[in-house]
Image 1: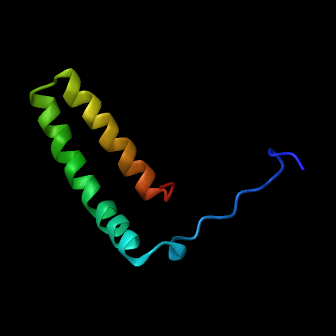
Image 2: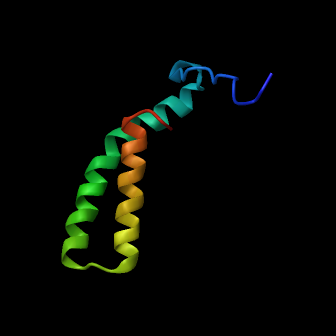
Length: 69
């Protein structure tokens, strides 16, 4: 059987350990305020590191809210 034909099982967050579910829950609810605060900070002091960090934070927020991680 080809590796491409194998289907990945669907994601079920209840199969994770309880401590990891709590970490994901709190990270999901904290990531947007942190990203907005950092975006405001980046508007006033835009450095390369701040822009990259803002992109990374926005990516993490998107991944958490779409349940990809």
